[in-house]
Length: 251
Image (cartoon, rainbow, N blue to C red):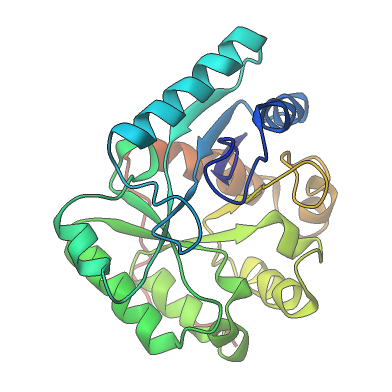
């Protein structure tokens, strides 16, 4: 399995507190069937390191990958970031190519303030797409606008934007509303990817083993493979994800 969204690089954001925790997260993921993790530190988020593309990001990433090799933890770590789409500088960051996409692909993991309205989110996603990138919408089930109008996700899905649900949302660890909306998105077949969005080993851990019984009760085996392996593999390989030719609706 492939984890496309994980805050595992130590001491660069609100994820892994130190190298020991980061190694525990990687080892736990591997024991639970994850062989590839895309490291996605927060980017452009106030109060955290900027984590823009450049020397500092490369150094932190390379040091962490070397640490895992030294510790004998056989998880492949790939570069990425979770871009906070702030309207004040989003256009400039895109134009200057300062953001780290998922494994240097055309896919850009994108998050918003939880209170951003639907129109502003759609405008930002459209801007990203106009720059030749494919937005990967991080945990849309957690945004108030989507909770108020889940049809937003159907519109983004139809445009070819990638919908990424959080494991913790589906398991009820990130609030009742996120769980209800996340399950509705999943049931409607509008999710492309499920990721852990792991930050630690206690509250938001790595690994998908606890999620599998939930998925097996609600999804076909083919859909589970699509969410946890096939689509994430397409993304890190910079391969296209098929876009539906008809409009999708979410009640």
